[in-house]
Each structure stands twice: as structure tokens, then as C-alpha cells.
Length: 534
Image 1: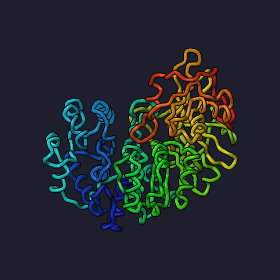
Image 2: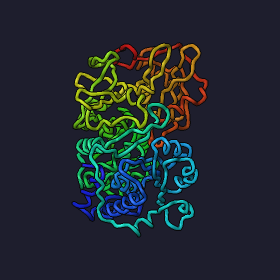
Image 3: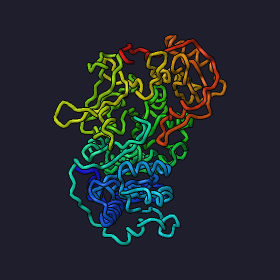
């Protein structure tokens, strides 16, 4: 199966079923399929060929969905970008992946002229705006013209599941945008595993608040279309009340979210909304604090709560079954169906229970590497035990308990090198987040002339009466003495990536605020034994 077969098969089975809800606009599977076919024919006529890259810079919308599936039906590779991507970064990515086409709205079209003059490969721009929009005048095609001029019958470009489907650009590994190479086989496997884990069927109505340019948001679209479900596009990330009203209005059954959004939701009176239709809530993108997950289960006892871990490099990989939440609230569970996972120490051996190691993922959901970056690919994507197989060495640190459940310790990029020891900041955050007066917390390293880096906790207060001394007192009672942060700073908000995860680089580049200073400290996660290099 190919990724765009998700749409074609659902349109064939239930053509009149609602595929998308976006505000007051609704679209059936048949409508999306026809328009994706028309766009595919327009792209092929414009010279877009098999395996060539097409950048899509469009906000979450029906047009974005048509663009994604139209590109795939044309045999090309979809490169979804955030609508707020600046012209400079857009030019870097267009050059990096040698894109031949650009699809988007006003944000994308603003830089189209300079892109044409600066790119050796870009040859067609398609506007999602109306024909009469002034910004669309620089485009070669508009969606309106495509839908008037091209046949809407099914398009079949010869492809195999080894062909590429997406390049998902991420800056997490290197700080520079790198395209994760996603084959059709990989994406289908990841979508199937997600659908199986969450038990999604055609009866489900899933709301999505995460941009399609992020793997977490993209898989909400793909799993919904794989199963013939309805996807509600809610372009209101952070507006918690509006999201809850949409859940109430559309009788949503599935709610994927990220931890920062959950912290806001828990401050609302959830009983003021009719959330009886909800069947499941799933969190990914960042570890779900144990206190938040238990509070959510208490507030909505009829809802299954899933905590997942995944990356753009492998899609969803680990999931905590809802029935395990009460006893393992801080865990991200076990591998999703069709996936194998284990931990490795620095010497390649598998550490015992309670000892941290690097998470390794094996399965068809592991992607191919990073586009045009063999050196970075070789660090994270390594040969597996069978010929031609690729394993993902995530760089993320986990430990396993005696029951084999995985517990997140730290992302390798987040570790703080303090006094010759690597500190895992999320372990400190878990302790600080136990304070009910803390709304959000992030622990980062800041420059220190003696230690290299000092540990600093940045907090958003839910209660203005909370003091730094109270935070430090709580840390001292819950952690070894060398685990307590050296600095505490209260801030109005924490910088976020567009997908909702906290931007730690933004925090570490900020000015260190004067606060309560303590003796030099280093950290090993509570309950986790030290190992070489950790």
C-alpha cells in the first residue's frame, strides 16, 4: 500500500462520509479525492515527476490536505513546512531538497520571486489563494484554475512502497533544518501501528491542533484517512476553550494533544463542557507529567488516556496502555505493534532494569535517514541484524523498570554538562511539576565559568505566591543534595516551538536572572543508577 491509497480506498468505500471539518467547511472523502487527483494531474503536466520534491507551505486546512495527497498521487515527495516559515529558511530548504514546485498561500508566495531567481530547480508555484487575490498573481497555477481545468479521475503514477513519500524537516538533532527521509513503507507502517494502538475506526472523529509539518500532526491526518475517520482541523492551538467547544460541537472521539496544552486544559472547569463523546486522549511530542495524566484521568474517568513517545525519525514508537496509567503514570509504556525497542549502554550492552541507556528502535516504521547528510545519518541510522535493515539510535536516554516499561530520562540534546557530569533536566522538571502552584517548568543549563554549565529552573507560576525558596525546599526533600538547581527564575511564559514543545535553546540563550545560588551540583536521575557517559 502507498500513503495516498489511504484517501483513495476510503473514498471508494464511503465516498459521502465526512473526511474533514475545518470551521464551517466540510468535505467528503470523494471531494478530497477528486481535487487531489486534479492537482496531481496539474503537477504532472507542469513537469513534476516521480521522486521530485514539492514544498507545501500552508496552514492546516482543507487546501493543505488536498496539496499533500495531490503531491503523493503525482508520484512526488511532499515537504510540508510550517506556514510561519521565514523566507530565508524557506530558501534554505528549497535549495537543500532541490524542490521543483512550491504550493502555498500568502506566506509562501511572498518569497516566490526571490526563490525563482535563487533556485536552480524550482519551476512551478501553485497558489491556494483565490484567482482574484493579488498575492496569487505571481503563481503559475491556482487551486481554482486547477479545479476548473483538470480531469478528476484517479491518477496512477507507477510507484512502489520503497519510493519516498515525505521529507519532514526538523532542527532537533543538529540545530539546522534536516529533512527526515520517509518512504511509503515506513509511513504506512507508522500509521498502521498508531491506528492499531489507539483502536481508531471509521466511526471516530479526531480533532487535530498540531501543524501537519510536524510528524505528530501529520499522523493524525494519515491515521484518520487510513481508517476512514473524520478529522476536525482546529486552527486554535493554545485557545483551550475554543478547542473544547469544537469537541463538544463535533462530538469528537479522539483528542491528540501536547503536555503544554494539557496544563492549560486542567486549569479550566472541564465539567462546563460536554465531553461525553471523547473516547481517548493521547499525548506525545514531549513526556506527559505523571501528575497531569492522573489528574486528567480523574477529571475525565470515561476517557482512555494514552502517553506516547515518537520522533520524526520513526513516527510513534512507544505507548503506555491506558490500563497501566494508574500504576505507571510516568512511563511511556511499551513498543507499538510491529516495533521492537531496547536500551543500549555506551559499550553496546543492554543495561539492567533501572539503569539508563540509549533507546534503539527497530521496525518498518524507522525512516531512511537525513536528506543529503550521510554523516548525520550514520550517527542515528545504523545497520540492523538483517541485510538492508536500518535501526534508529535515538540519542534519547530511557530506563526500564522491572516490568519492562520504558521511562523517559532525557533527550541527548537536552543534557546539561555540569561539573563533568551530564545532567538530565527532565528528571528535575518532574519533581518541580509536582508542586500544584507550578504551571510549567523547564530546566536548562546556563554558562558557568567553573562548572561549564549551571542548572537553572525556569517556572511559570499558577500561584503568584510561590517563591523560589519553596521550590528549592521541595527539590531538597525529593532529590539528592547534588540534584537541586543552582538558579530559579520565574517567567511569564516559556518559549515554544510551533508544535507546542518548549524551546530550550530559546531559554538557554536568555539572560540568566539572579536568584538563589547553591553550591555546585550535578545530577543522576532519581532511582536511576549512574553509568559511564551519563
